[in-house]
Length: 539
Image (cartoon, rainbow, N blue to C red):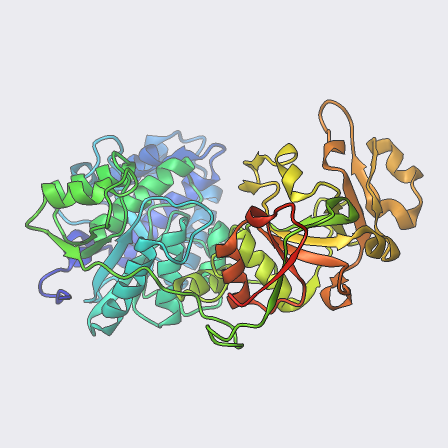
């Protein structure tokens, strides 16, 4: 692939011009004054006010003070307020923040009639650098991402090529798993990084994105159109982020664009008014999730280059152990007395594992590391690798950690299974552990105590881990038939005949064998029959 040289594409230098120190100071004073007002200003009105001040051609502080009194009211613009705003502006400049405006004849309305802002941008870093910036665009994805996704395989293939080009850098942002992953990769590889942020310039306002930027080399260039004085909805902030990133980057990498989605419309407008070279993934099948890719290529063939198709069959790294073809014998049960056991179900884990940072999660997914998909079977394999089912306090009142079990076997799971929108997962999935009731009773497991909140204090302190609020009709949980056990369960302490692992089908069995060592028998739910036998398999 060809990477453009700075002489071919320099979008930032073509479109943005840094303000003088005096103008920057006056803009920061104006911003600090607007922030001090009782009500924050919406983005378009905020940038309109700043645009009017820039259009005045004035920069002196006395002129700004008079302009503020004329624009608002003399009673609301007092000298004390102005002096405090000036002090804040001085601190910003000392911290390396600058402001920049669009070079004429470009205007923000050229790319968005609905929101003709920003009139200027705020930033830190090297605005005059000559890097060619490559930005990645991908429609929003589910919380659970498979490491075998076609778009992810393409990203793994393309980003190292950008890294190898001496004059190229990565243009990224935050707020979606793709933006966050691209930014995390650029930081790990110590590549030039240009960030368009959907949050204010102050570091304390990076919201969840602090997990991406903190503790790493700062971006080469950091830019935003927001400060604390601005009030914009999340949807508007994200739309403006996408628009600025597309406008100020030199090369676009298109992974998957949803048909008729906001991102497809934005990039189509961008190519109509200010075209850029774009590498576009051509998926194997055209679907609603990627139809925008094909439409971009069809509309702008002179600017679009198909991204070479990449094999998606990347297998997560296998843990040390027997190679394929020399797998240990695995006991597969074909008959189970379901009533003899209690069941602990594993779930998918959107985002990081407990104890794993968000950055570590992103890089593991990018690198297709073992268990990085965080599906329910990955959770199961992770527990088997550790050899321990860990107790927790989440959703349990009090500080005593406990393990949750249910008397419902997998064949009854539909009675208690539902989609939890708040947690973005199923309440139960057909993966987990079965352990004999006798063993769990000896370890302190008891049925949950379903009671009203006011009854909690009446429960013996040592038994309060069993409490589950049950107040009809708002809180109904008896149908789960829950048991709770204090503390962790060490799997090595589950003797032969006292427990097993269960998965839905043979594909999960094979994946589990490759990912973890099985000391317990396993039940493949799709293969259970009534003939009461144990089968030993090597695959």
